Picture (tube, rainbow, N blue to C red):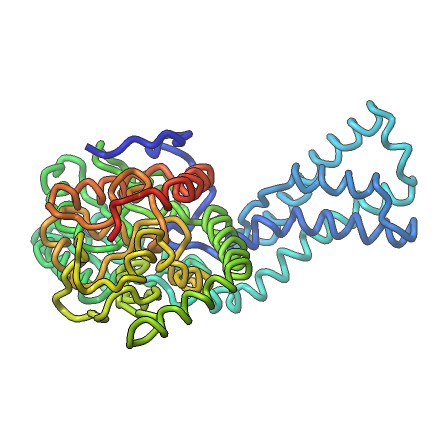
Length: 473
């Protein structure tokens, strides 16, 4: 049974989202969300400086109100320019009417000159429209910053699957590279299209996804074939691909299940990261700020531990071990060395109580979790997060992915220094398969119910138990 989350504020099934390109943190989405609100503020401040010569408190307050009303901005990259113009004018129109009404009703409008008000009424929408034009020109550069397109496949070569494929092909800035289709049916029953090749049948799907590192899978199978879909989902649990239904669904074990659109086609996510769009921006920003602050405050302690390790036992100060990171890719995780060995091979024995490999200083570091402090550098590098599923050694991953269904789904997010499982009593050695199953259940529960409040709860609980927890050795 999955663990309950005391800070979950909403169901993970059926929620709506503004993200239109599911599958990764979309940098363009973040830019578009901030574009209109920021341009309204910048245009207001520019007019204030021109008309008044300073940014007085009334203008600062009005800027905060305007930003709040306009945030988040809408995505308009895929729309014709006349639609962008009309929607910009309409959105600004209702904001301006609301602000003018509040200004007259409260008498606050007397704090602004008539020239400034009139100028802002036309400069603001003009700035937003110009900003969207500039974004269209710079969008390819922004996408390059985000990385290579995501490789995708469609399961089910039918009418709705082909419509999705055509939309993906014809939509600019989708960042989706469609490889082709998988289907079991005879070619005479398929919707033929030479532009989208048939890559194989359903029994070969899982192997293809792992071999070619497919990141997005769209299931376009009829609901009448529910047993076949369940079998496909079961086979795909050993991958890190994001999975979506097109367009209907039946109830299953969803991870961040929510509705989305892909190039105008409705889809329902089955297995997705919670850190898309603004959630990803918030998560990464908090990681950078907190980890940088901790490293600065603890730099004397870090230096002292490094010297102590060097003086008390031979070997390197930092132990580097290969772990699975986001989407199952290998990363190097840093820890202060706490053992006389630095195992990182195909077979790794977990640390146990009374383990002779652990040094005297290492026992103290492991008990107090001070050996984990170098991982804040991993967080700054973008390899890890402060809160998330704890990374296991590659050898352990390869073992447990064969024994526990859904094990690899925990890699839909970056591994964390601490996690929901660790503060729920599943920290340290896992002696039985049931204990590892419970840890994975907690990890998946974190993915289903993530919120910034849950992260804060986990961090505070980690601080409270780190010096009295006896489970780590």
